[in-house]
Image (spheres, rainbow, N blue to C red):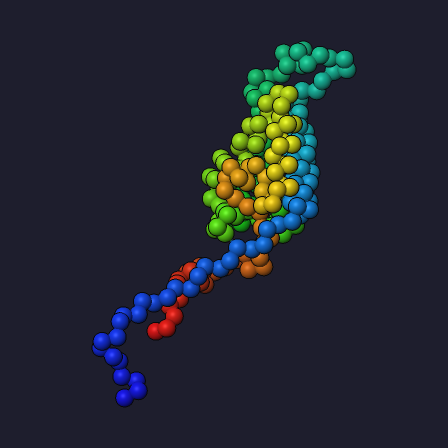
Length: 200
């Protein structure tokens, strides 16, 4: 019989499909556009935070008043909250978007996202502690913060088009695929993640 099974044939292991290939690397111009949008958002957060702090504390510098005099009549909690307020307004929505899709506000608008070099999703802890925090820490160093930013940005002109913070976090910025922008139902996600078996 043609459909009989040969009992002496070697066993055949099921073959799993290979994972999907990584999306194309984002262009330098798109990354620059995303950075500019995030920068504008940061300036807006700083302006809003300053107005909120001034409104709550009712502290307004007088004409010709020195910085030392202003700090003396400023409540201690305000001295600590003033620098933190812009950071909170900027970081919270950015971190939420990084957690949900691997993009910032600027990257979402231009259609690019952050992934690991193997194409998998980067965890929020990796994005914050390895990608964002070292660069932010370097920027606040007096006199050399601009140099840290310049060196980091110049790495984008390498063949891999990865900045220094990308190399530190093992990440790369790629174009966002259309299917990654649409929400996926849980049932469909489980079905898509299950390995398919060939030749059975």
